[in-house]
Image 1 (cartoon, rainbow, N blue to C red):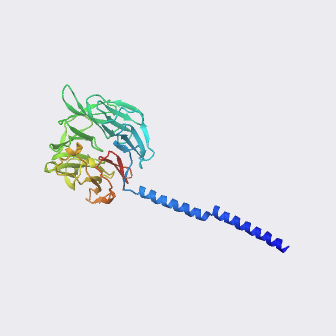
Image 2: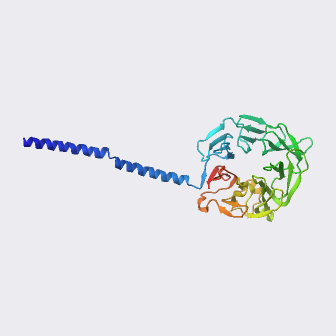
Amino acid sequence: MLKKIFIISTIFLMLILVFFGIYIVAFKKTDDRAVISNKIDKEKVDIASVVSKKITNITSDSVIAATIGPDGETIRYYDGADGRAWTMTLRGTNRETLINETLGIPKKVKWSPDGNSAILTYDDKIIVYNFATGTQNKLRDGMDDVVWSTSGGRILYKYYDQNSKERTLNISNADGTNWKKLADLPFRYTTFVQMPSSILAAFWPTADANVSTQLFTTSTLNEGTPKEIFSGKNGADFLFSPDGKKVLVSYITEGGKKVHLGIMDSNGANFNDLMIPTIVQKVVWGRDSKTVYYAQPNNAQDSVLWPNDYLDKKFTTQDTFYKIDITTGKKDRIVELNDIKEKIDAFDLFLNSSENLLFFINRTNGLLYRIDM
């Protein structure tokens, strides 16, 4: 009897040991969780290193022009490879086409301030496309340059009359209707804008090192005689502040070897050199009209002619990024030099609504980039 009890107990103990061993191997939850936890922690570190990059490329194809979408949370842009319009998140994800059809690749694109419409300039026509309504309008021949007005979706444009040989500044609805002449233009190549928070439009000869710039203003309500408010700087370009009270002025010295950024009141008074070597194409105003974000070129050779050679794409720059408070003159670097891992020639800068993201097109490769500030 004792022998039978011993044998049965031994067999029972062996079965318990076998099942316990199987349990340890197959169902050891604590060690498995530790492995999974370590894997997740590693993934978090990898993702964080990507997200924390100061400068990030967010497109794979070249970009003609980009802007913040109407919702403030997306980017809209025209693709330089196929001419289509796209939308995506501020991070560059969830890319979708806004319209699939295309008339080709536009030479220029100018987005409306609200991001709902775009002026598309092709070799033989200018189209205004409204994404909210899905409509497009071809503008009349003779309108060889068109920009957005700041009021009610209207446009300002230069019109050239083949018969009279006159060049005039005009304003109309976005579809070209209800137009009226504002002023005669004395320059063959002219840049013009409507001044923010103002009934005035400003125009000047397109930046050229060989031209002494004259800045004029004229009413957008009716035809009048333009008023000259500033002169005396060669190759000048202008960028008005969002409140319309200040204007940045980029200009050249030493026959185009040096470029400067200055500031003055929007009536042309109180000019002051900010001692910043950049041009307005590399600058964007903050919404407070006192903060200016800019890219500063560092490697331009003395042989180049500013701004002509740059605007003609005869050379590219290596830029660093700053912001300045124009009321105090305080400058801060946005990106440390060791965070710039490639050659960046930034232009067409714009900000998101909270101004913690700065976007730009890199002329070196045509791609769209984001800086996390």
